[in-house]
Length: 133
Image (cartoon, rainbow, N blue to C red):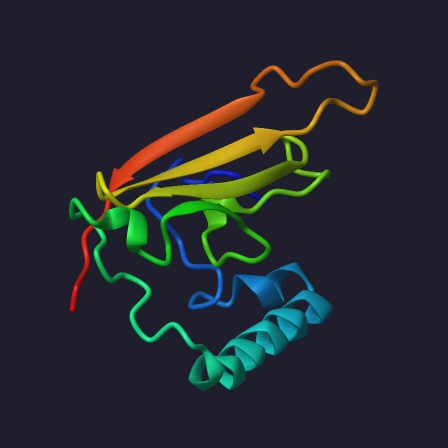
């Protein structure tokens, strides 16, 4: 995971919508289906009705998304990594600064198998975020 397309494209890609989870394996495809089913089942139970409230405002610290979030699941191909990818294993997280209205995608690369640091230890991409209400 986390690799560029064979054609060199850096365009964002949604692994769920293009069937790529199933291209990895039947088990990965079924596991992603189970994650989406759990999300759909839990969504109506969420006490947070407006997670983007105050995003990008001076009151952003009260936004439920404000803070650091470890990604346990993503559909973004450019944020999906595994130990057998050419760049190695990595952990992805997001840092939401709801006052500034930014989301910083952070990728921390694991050390190499022999314990040496990865040639790239961390990558950060900051994007502007705004609320659509």
